[in-house]
Length: 80
Image (cartoon, rainbow, N blue to C red; front, top):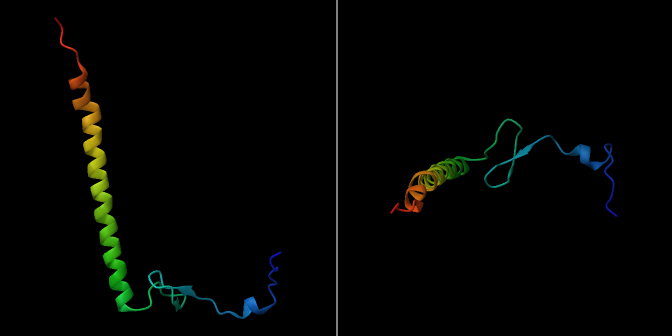
């Protein structure tokens, strides 16, 4: 069975802190990033994520156009 945590034990001796969102190093409570290198990495990741989102939305839009406009036109049977 897992040990129960007691608020008065060693766990309360750890000072309040956060971890860097890129590398996981401990940083103070006022920061999210530990260094300029991690900041550059984070900016690069966010740009890549934004680009991927726009590409996904474009593909989704193109599929919607095909599904709503082109497929109904192709499925019409010619009248004799």
